[in-house]
Image 1 (cartoon, rainbow, N blue to C red):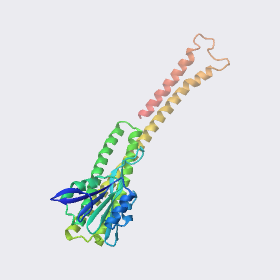
Image 2 (image 1 turned 60 degrees about the horizontal axis):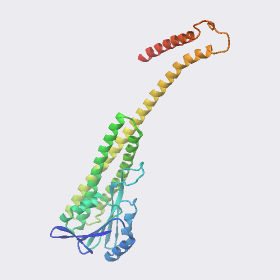
Image 3 (image 1 turned 120 degrees about the vertical axis):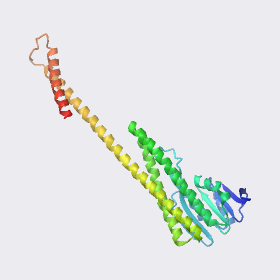
Image 4 (image 1 turned 180 degrees about the vertical axis):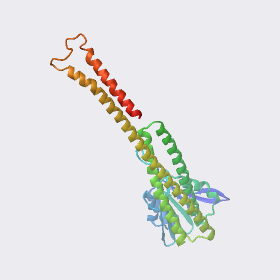
Length: 312
């Protein structure tokens, strides 16, 4: 699906075809016919439009004559039905700059483009470089919002684990860890992209735009540091819970071993008195109670010694 937007009297207006200063937004479902028509209408290389279809596309920039391509990664919720997959993944946003239009191509719907659409009436379509930087800003805000959600979800799951060690919470923490791996990788790639844009002046930015890009680089670095911090905290938490579970398992095994040893005493005495040979007190009316009394006395003595030793 292709959307066309223009600014008329400071209002965002949807149009039927692209014109000068139009923002062209391509959303799923993506069709080959639409790519071909858009490529022919705006003289955009078809490969630039198809780059968004590769979910593993890295952050980068490229130029082909008068057409410039910028790819940046943004987070989005993972709609996978697999319970072991990450809660969030990162997807590419393709930004294409032509002589008169700015084109964005998305393989998935994402919050960054929605936020940009809501603020599009405040943009100046003739200042395409600033519009690109504003998309970068929405992407960074998207990372920050999702990182806050991840941290809140992690804290809630940790509290549940403190109350009861269950596999469900551990599995969800692992899904959060996978999400953070996606974030760290994409943020590092985005940071390198912005630093290269600042160093090479690929977009031919003005001084104000360069200052704004420097601010975006700093915010991206902060988001990357936050993601790394949350990753380290989560790894430490999982290691700590693994140690706790191991200790609890050792305590359970120790208790079971102790009980087994205690039970072996009366079993041993009963086995001896169950032999088919002449035994002491076998003709006594207390023949049944004698081995039981002996077992209880020995068991009591061993239990007393054990408890006394453990208290030390």
